[in-house]
Amino acid sequence: MALYAMSDLHLSHYKEKPMDIFDEVWHNHTEKIYNNWNNIVSDEDTVIVNGDLSWGMTMEEVKPDLDFISDLKGRKIIVQGNHDYFWNSTAKLNTLYDNMFFLKNNFTAYENFAVCGARGWLCPGDTRYTDHDNKIYLREAGRLRSSVEMAVKAGYKGENIIVAMHYPPTNDSCENSLFTELFNEYKIKRVIYGHLHGASKYNNSLEGEVKGIEYFLVSADYLKFKPIKII
Image 1 (tube, rainbow, N blue to C red):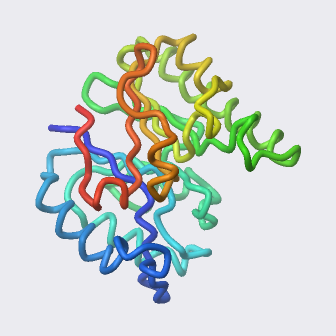
Image 2: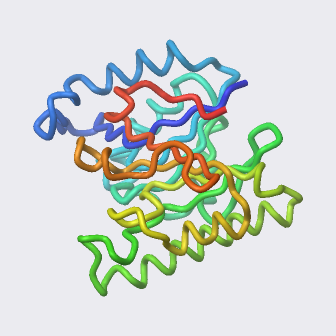
């Protein structure tokens, strides 16, 4: 029962939105996701989907995309992305599908691991960061701390806590943030995130082991639309 991850599916079954206008790698990306996912993942596996599921703005618009994800193999753990405007009540979302868990202000178990997470946000020092971002940044750091503390209270140690975010946990200079300070505080060893697109962003991000923490960038286009095995 392996654990995989892939984010930024950017589905659009409700209304066609061609993604290849951004980069040709996105041509027929929904078909690529469907085929690669079901060839790699088994029904017994779990997949973390780190946000930006759909271009749908409302539950009516996003429902066909959620159904598509549900129909893919395996159990899914879902994190909110910056484009997931449909996400209002996490409790309500968690009543919709037996094989999908929506992760926000909570945590869920994968074998002997706890999967914690938050959407995250731009971090101070990022070239795009403004004063407007500070409130959201602090709120998201608080949400991640709350998620991790729930897991700790349930008996999980840092080495058995996996953090899933949508945004990267640092600015575009890979400097420390409230997120990375939290990882160090709780001795977390695995962090999974998405959001980044294009070679210039890929090459300026945390990947692999850094200061004892293993980072995974799992944007779908970066992975060539193939879920990556985490454990």
